[in-house]
Length: 72
Image 1 (cartoon, rainbow, N blue to C red):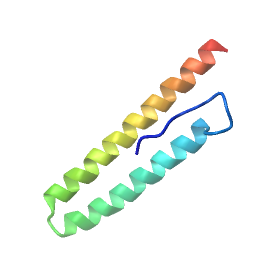
Image 2 (tube, rainbow, N blue to C red):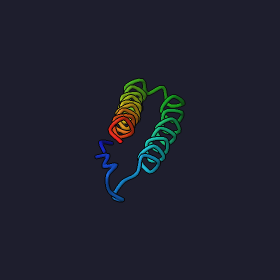
Image 3 (cartoon, rainbow, N blue to C red):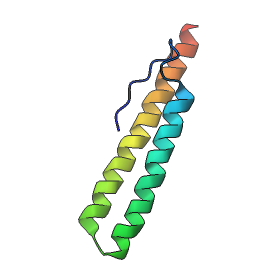
């Protein structure tokens, strides 16, 4: 789930990164629901780790955006 955020080009925008991370989190939550129904605690923990990574990515992207705004 690691993405490079490049705000100086049209390659990747903050909005695109944010949307992708939110999509990833949504998919992980749905997968967790299925694992929970099967009482698969290890599988649920794997999905929680992926969600944590996505949230970290959102925070990193937000920081990069804030730094860009401060520089401009």
